[in-house]
Image (cartoon, rainbow, N blue to C red):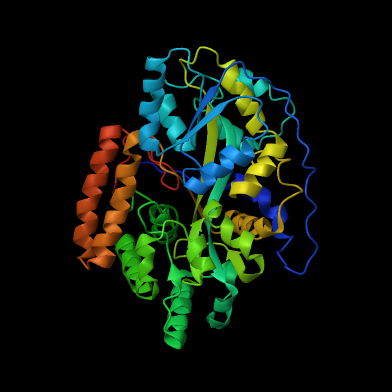
Length: 449
């Protein structure tokens, strides 16, 4: 097996927000001036558009998409958010039922790669050329050239996951600990000290049915302890990692098993420390910006694992009038709408002009944490799974199953890791999926060591 270094371009797009790191959130400071609210879009769709999306799936985010982000689009948009397991079926079913359907797909980079590999996406070089002087981040445009040449999706938005703490928790930080350089051992000590002194299990994770805790294991804990997310799944380092997390779980609020997002338990003071997707933390900072602080993910023995979530806009190959959904691409990537998307949902812009001003104060705290995380010299960047298509949910479930068996049920870690590694390998074999960062290998399918 031949491995290579992690490509530097993928430490990438979120570094764009480092400029915001200097504007540290301060509830007593001056408010950031907002962009003018007047926005006029000149594009004219010729028919209604069905927007199939794996993003903005939660009810509140979907509502903001329909009622705020799309409100100035001069045409009918049927926004249909759903899990990625339904996306592939929906595209085919719609076009079989109505060959003239106008469809736009909004999905993660990995889902778009899968559609491309199935021959389901059309090149969008002409659409990109029609977007004028819009300044997309170069690193994202490189990702969108799925064959190394043609553009198969237009970048839409990006996000990450960060840590958040109620300021009530700060006095309990271990002596000498720095939030921006926190280790996982210090994180456990912090949670333990709060429990020892208050009796409160103050840490919270979104481990409920609709939560994203599987991303914590895939993009944060595994890379930080093994420099891998898949190849080293059952390694000695992975076994040690699960031992660590089992210890940390002693101080985690048991209601985490029903939390889907962490904003609400933060706002009700049920937890003081949390990890979640930036878009799912916005509500806490929006309602009580002076009470919370955001900070980068902790550092483990192999570095600071973190996951970048890149979303794009694609047009299915068999859409007859590709120019119609292209009008919606034009709209969604306008700097004003990129700013609006950031303000409404916490998904960051993909155009270099999108977040230079007009960023609400409560979002500066999150964007600064994202920037510090991405620019960390010991960063271990991780991509969302690529090439699994409808099997993505199966992949995610195996990480949660491993957590349940080792941490909640107390089963032997070596036996669980060996058993679940076999299931993961079977999935990779069936999908003939390549490795993705931080794992780099020329073998296909990706082979767990």
